[in-house]
Length: 140
Image (cartoon, rainbow, N blue to C red; front, side, top):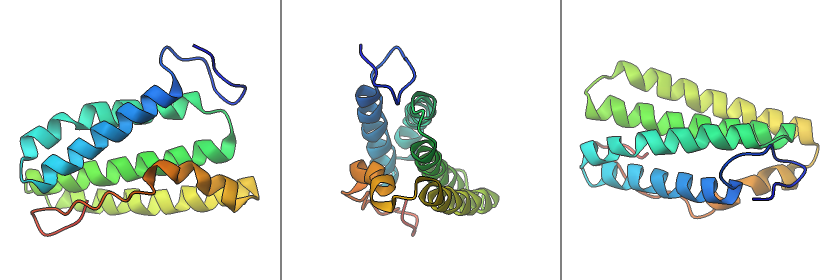
């Protein structure tokens, strides 16, 4: 497997990790939306692990910050879903904190890169918004 100069060597390609992350996240949200919380909870681990691996691979500071923001988004969803599934409203406060942290890292990435178009291009896999709705009254 060949890494480019912006990536650290890793046993799995960045594209493969990105795909597994997106698919796991999709099913995590989809099962939550369908009211199948137990199945959704199963997909938390692969979503979180692949998100962390993507953090490790990237060397560019601005893109790394965008990946931190994406991980904040993952944790925002995980905490929100867990809050609903386990009837633990206190977890929602942590979910909101992850939202705030994600916004911070997006802004920091924009400032660091000096090129907003290039910085935000790393959200390309999220162009098709995760438009699933929570059966518990919220949106993931």
